[in-house]
Length: 110
Image 1 (cartoon, rainbow, N blue to C red):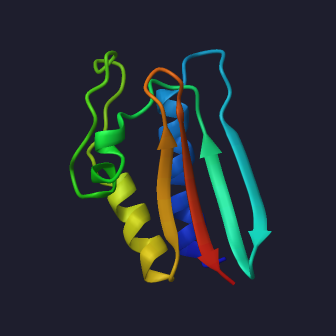
Image 2 (cartoon, helix red, strand yellow; image 1 turned 120 degrees about the vertical axis):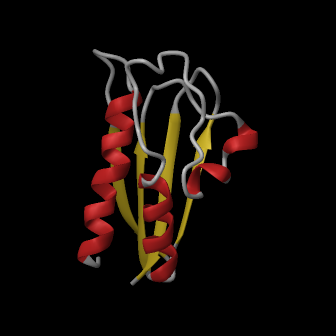
């Protein structure tokens, strides 16, 4: 896996930690799939409305969060992750339901 992908995986994990309530857990999994890699990071945070599922990977959009005084960001992390994954021929997406957390998944060719 290219080093810049690994470094940006830390961005996804950092976001998951930022949005996960104290005492809850962030889950990471990785496996090989169809000659490539699949990794996911799941949190138990506020979740992301379906209508924001693709825009969060664009530069600067952020989904409003109830506890926004505690959760700060600049809106670049996921845009950078998206760019690097796509540049390496992969895909990245989010599976989420408001109030039930989010799973960020990416797949890279081997």
